[in-house]
Image 1 (cartoon, rainbow, N blue to C red):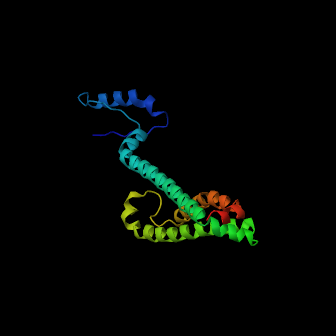
Image 2 (image 1 turned 90 degrees about the horizontal axis):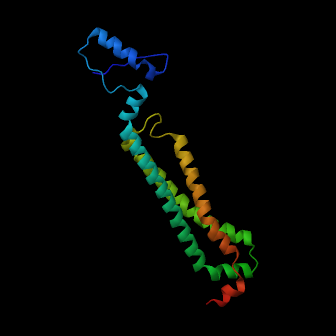
Length: 177
């Protein structure tokens, strides 16, 4: 049996008063494990909070792995296209155009992946709807914020290879092969 008491003062100070009232009603009732309502709720939601924390950690790890993978693909692409970039620079391409070219390539890859991920996430909303509290499974704000976060991570992952591509010396690039 659980007794819930509402009070205007601090719950810890009411403990002794409640014990004496219960003892006055029936001295045979044992009183133990006195907790505040917040503690009861915290204990009952522990598994859900732990699951949410673990899912958040795994989500951040997935985001980090995606950023590292995209950086690797873009860095490899730039290293494979060094000769092409050197030719472009030697015939007059501006460095900002080279930067936009590499950044655009990375964004194109990410947008395709992002669209596929959004479709898969919308399809999976039925599976996750019972795990959510306070938001709907198809909350548009959440989908938009996550998509923007992924695009920002994409820009960051593509920035360094694109910057390196702008520093390609055409003479060295043309002599390399």
